[in-house]
Amino acid sequence: MKWLKSNVFVPVLAFVFVMFFWVTAFAASDEIRIGVIGPMKFIQGKSQWNGAVMAAEEINAKGGVKVGSKMMKIKLIQADSNEFLSITDATNAMERLITRDKVHFVVGGFRTEAVFAMQDIACQNKVIFIGCGAASDELCNRVAKYYDQYKYFFRGTPFNSTALVKAAFSHVGSTAEVLRNELGITGPIKVAFVAEKAQWADAMVPAVQATLPKMGMELVGVWRPSPVATDVSAELSAIQRSGAQIIFTFFSSSVGIPFARQANELKIPAMQVGINVEAQKAEFWQATRGQGNYVITSSTYARNVECNELTKPFVEAYIKRFGEVPTYTTGTYESIKMSLVDTIEMIGTLDPDKIVATLENRVYKTPPSTIMYVKDNLGRHTHDLKFGPGYATGIASQWQDGEFVGVWPNKWKPAPGVEVTFKGVKPIKIPPWMIKAYKK
Image 1: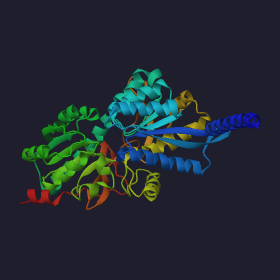
Image 2: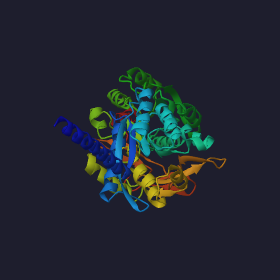
Image 3: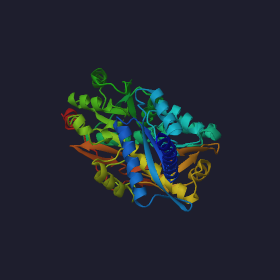
């Protein structure tokens, strides 16, 4: 009897294992596996995941992706990079996505220092990686310089640091014009520049030093707090003594919350303008206990602001699904749905080299912009985004009494004879304590 049981059990067990692995392999062959990598304990990573989830749900609800004659469903695999704290954790997370999870594509990444390392790993393995967070120009300069090695990397969002500076200068210029008109300031507007101590912001310092005087403004000082500082009272006291009328900010991390809160608690008579990623999220108002009022930040979305006909439907659908306005790192949505999936369906294959060759030459609309990948002055592909009217420009938004309101572009004149205003933008508001200080 024992012999019989053993001789029956072993073949049955082997059959079960074979069937399990066969079914698993068959199921996997009908899936397009996309890794979503980012700091998942922070808003930047959560927004990356939300954007990807929304894209996958929409695609799968319609039956999946048509790859030639075959329909394939999207499967998302989340990877917490922990990149704010550890580059090693980020590289390990990318390695797991590629070697263990066998992903076809990766979207995400946030902190520049970590994305460089993740870019190396993805490209070495010929896995297309669309960056949805890091702004450094060098990420795409690598593509131009070493195309065969780095051609698998594309920028999804935001546009690069150089373009971010150009956009931010436009926001500062618009704010300065409002201050001059409404407060009667006649001399040079005094500007304090505050950028978190991070690689992506390093190039901003010389750019600000060179450009502000050309705009008729005076730079009164440069401050570089930690990206995760919780107390910036020393910096703010120095800024207050400087007589700054605009505080030009570059924050991608959590320092944006205490800076905004403490600046308004001190009632510094200056407008906060620039980049503050924390200010792009709904929780900013509560996190600053309402002291984030009047903060202006570069952003991608604000409710009721329409960059094109795709913007409003996406924003409203996102709010319905997740209960908040999307931030820029939700660019994973269009990176999956419009960059990857539309390209795959055009050419009918998952072959990364064929996808690269097609994607880098496409021009297509997404909810925040029109995507066109540019070449450098030597005619080399960079896989970087074209910045300017009609393409990627972003918006600027201001917190006005608990509402996140789009305020730019509003009669923006980027070139002679060109004026740009997005539907839904509203006028910039000056803090009442600043009005009081200048209209005594």
